[in-house]
Length: 186
Image (tube, rainbow, N blue to C red):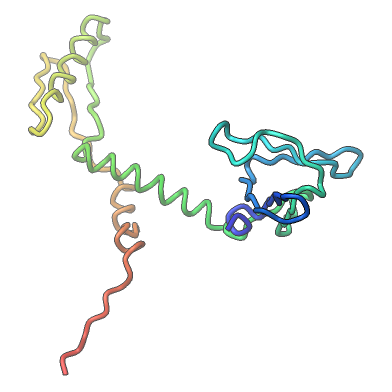
């Protein structure tokens, strides 16, 4: 599995006498190569504390069974074949997270207050307090916020990228659930 996810696999054989007792699989993110004069002289394993299968230590190259897939960017390490799916998956996750926050906030993108003159710090504090008070009660609709003369809070239209997301998004149910097969009546 590490070979497909990380492009490399580190296995440490554990011997009891001359007999192989077990094989430990190490997380490739915790193993670092040690190179000197263009030659691999060891692997430094920095385990994750008490939960790691082994204590932090340095292995000789012959003490570790190392497999890797070709990596044109790094001679000593492997490149996973699933790396091409990494950016689209992260992008989709970021877009879905943004949309979740957008929907949970009832599509409220915030408030912009326009004034005809510069506000003092006290006036700004009062407006911010009024806006916070507007959002205080959970589960109820937003209460209106009244501004003195000369100030206005324009309504904001929903940005075009949001509508674009809704048109092109593939929803999680479609990603995880197999297509339903309808049975024909005989």
